[in-house]
Length: 156
Image (tube, rainbow, N blue to C red):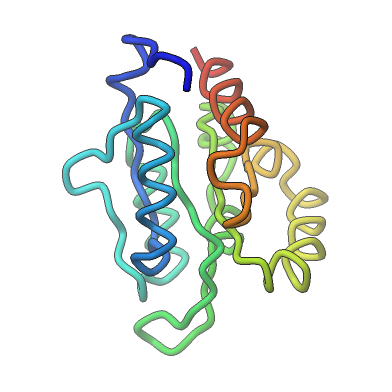
């Protein structure tokens, strides 16, 4: 593993509606190895509606947003996921260029994700450009590590 860049060691990420523990721990460990820290209180709980989650993301000053696809129901019984939040982020967030790491489980990646991501790319190409999709099998791969660091470095 490459040494952590000291400037990067202070970079902060926040997470929206994290996956269950077994996946979350692996992704958090990867981000820790890359020099990111989860900021205090920077977690949006599962069940939060997409609009509230998008408002929260826009209000933060983060170096990286961890926004899992994590399809589930919000507290009002509506289906929500990371692409729904991303679609609501808007032009101000786009201009910031904050990278979005989006873990996607294998089943979703090979079923609905590609189609829905294509729609997002057509409707909000600058937001789609910020998203780094990652399956559980890719956690820790050199290519994913490089993509994360390249996107974060591009925002400075």
